[in-house]
Image (cartoon, rainbow, N blue to C red; front, side, top):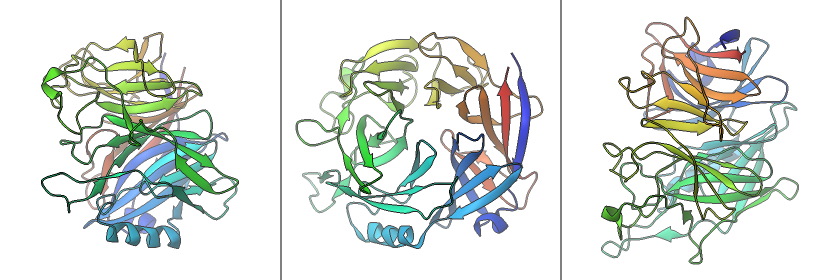
Length: 358
């Protein structure tokens, strides 16, 4: 099977697109009409702004963040428990694209109808936390990634306020009622906190607050159960006791994890719209030689994803045999995983490439 390039979109000059010389490509969301929405975050001197770029028929159109989102961001910055939640996380409900600013606010956009963004207040925000040694240092769980879903429930990967090195072991479900314009957190444990998935627990972390579960890269909600992609290479990311990355399935409460497939090296991974996994190897010296691939779950078969002429591009979205890649950029580089930093002024512009796998 090979990749055929269908369309290419240029994300430069960024100054004319988003009013900033730098931006991060956070996510790509695929719509039912074959177009896509790219979530861009401006990151100039921590002046964060969210932009949704609609890619259709070879053209790029920017949807700028609404004034209400700017107001909520200021409120968030003034809240001691949420001042660290500067970056929004995007998600998708059908053809609607959502932005989750914190555990208190979200916005829904409809790029097909061009309707105004819908602002939603999240009922009963997540609990706050303060260490016993420093009770005035109040914080709350931070959303790290929102996964794909089959209905109105969005699975969210969370980081405990006490967790270090970006360790994410917690999750919750965000239930969204579009008609009533309300949302709430629906998956909490008996103490009213986000739950954690614990698979192959490491005794070295027993009793360490914020590190009481398995490292979560991404989640997918299948309507009655959760599909989980985890990573815990023994020589990296906190020695979590898992030799390699793995795909699990749990029940609807994130409990009773069952192994679906374990990889032969450490890889980051994110679920696509078909609930398969887009893999990004940690190292270029492993079995995949650093090349991205598409892992079919639960079959365990893989397809290498390396479009000719686009070295260094990474897949960020897939749906029905269509793969979307991001790459290029003047001094562009990958920050963390599946997050491309683009900068104007040097070299080639950042690009989004749509391909067909066949």
